[in-house]
Image (cartoon, rainbow over all chains, first blue to last red; front, side, top):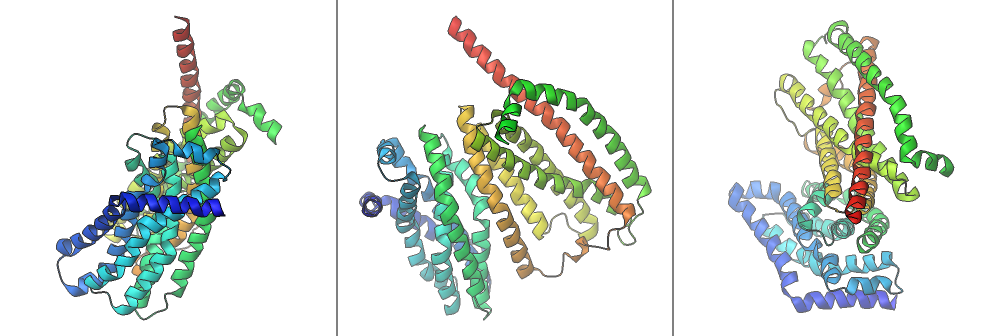
Length: 221
Length: 244
């Protein structure tokens, strides 16, 4: 447990000290969202209608953008070999990496999402549901993404392949995430959607580390 | 179980068995396709609403069945390859992916050609169409990962992991797309269900399904054979280079 926490701490510290890694994903998220009003026009009713979808799609893309760094840096300088020969099981190692990725790359997006939601004219209920849906749903993105990141690790042009592999698998999260916000904006209960998102996250928690660990062992063999 | 599998894992024996099956699959494909096309184009009655355009169904629906069946088969042989290190299973999974992608594409194209006269548009974001499109992307991703590794053994394992993660996700994707569709546009897809299936329609449909399956077996045998020979050639070439 101690080693597990220390590994997360190490990755978070590394991300903080590099700085640019965190702010780049965040600025990408903001810019993508800003492009939409410019593209579809500034009518507030239209923006409120497409807002949840825009925010979710931008979050998926921003998450995807940072995924390829999940194992890549450690793979390049060789520390991944060391970590894998250590006593921590590879599945747990993957889980630590996923948690670190979520904390450094996804959590900042969730923090700024309400602000962007307001700029897209989402009502208060919608923003609340959006934040809840992002908090519950985005762990799935990091967990499934870990499988893709492990499979494409060390590949030339791995990033492009990564998006082809991972984006189709993200579709359920996108659908339920948007549905939760839409439901609460229509004065309906967002709970069923949030429960489904939670279910997806728990399912991915089981499958993701297993598959990603298998892929890591494969890439390093 | 394990003993049986290893008996068929021998590529030589596999080639012998499939060599015996191959002529039969060719014959079956030709006969069933002729019978099925005759039944569906001339014998089956035109629909009372859709007229003759309903005949697109006999090409379209079996293609969609095949698309799903081939992915399932691919996932099963990937699992066999991953668990029992069964080389022919890996090759079977690899060889079936492009065929499955073609059937998915065929289902999408015939579906949109059918949609134009029926719904007045080539494409609607209907749950079935959308999930078929996603299936096509899963196939493409699977094929892409095979191409991105230089070492075929590694590529086989990576592709198998992807196929297995994909097969767990397919029901979830299917369910979520259905859910999404009912939320966004409730009553525009009822035309897909139409009247209850009568035997004059069902029989040609099943014959066409069997014809497609026989065709799949035929193409699969050709492709797996080509893969095995390609590997053998590679081994021979490497040996030759070592000698010289």
